[in-house]
Amino acid sequence: MKDWVKLPTAWINAGGLKDFGWKRGEGANHAAALMCLMVIAHHADPDSGESKVTYYTLERATGLSRAKISSGLNVLEVHGIVERRVEKRRSTYKLVGMARSGWGAFPARRMYSASGELVFLRDFSLRKATELNALKLLFLFVARRGTDTNAANISYDKIAEYTGIPREKIRSAVSLLVTHHMVQVDHIPSGANKYGVSNAYRIPFILPHRHMGTSAREAIEIEAADLPF
Image (cartoon, rainbow, N blue to C red):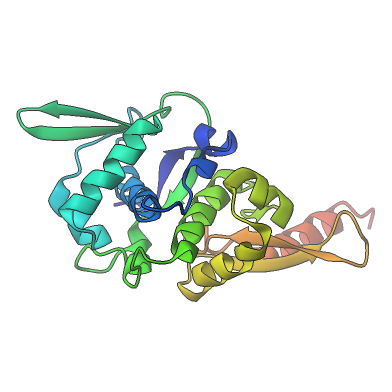
């Protein structure tokens, strides 16, 4: 498995994460759907988007029951994120939109234990809205990551707009990602106020050596190279 894989992001940028809400009787299935989507993406062909991942692999990676995996896969199909095809009693899953432009780098190899378990999901119970919100944030940060900064520079208002997460619940979801080492938060000067700061969200597993420290050093070296002496 590679350090990162391609994930189609057009549906995320179109506000598709808002369809995954913590509604009565649906929240756990929506969380299971995003958990399964991770594993499907990790095993997908980078060109066609086709993934022949098995139920056994999905169970081992996510810790979900077969019934909950089935419910999660149904959610992905209903929302047009994954297409499922059955041949000789075996399912093939295809990420919709892989052939088109618009994809983000989703972390892969370093998310797993030696036994094939997604370490990030080890303590998930599917009983807390914060878990679903954290999953939604991870997908959003992948979609909004800037290749120049290697981080998602996005405000709480924009996060709420793209994900439907209430503004007051964003902090706890970010904290969950930070606790599980899935996101690092950098503080950068605000563009709206010269005395203020804003947050930039960086996924450590994507170009881990490119961050605020190295970017600042590169900027200084470039500026120094342009000096007339």
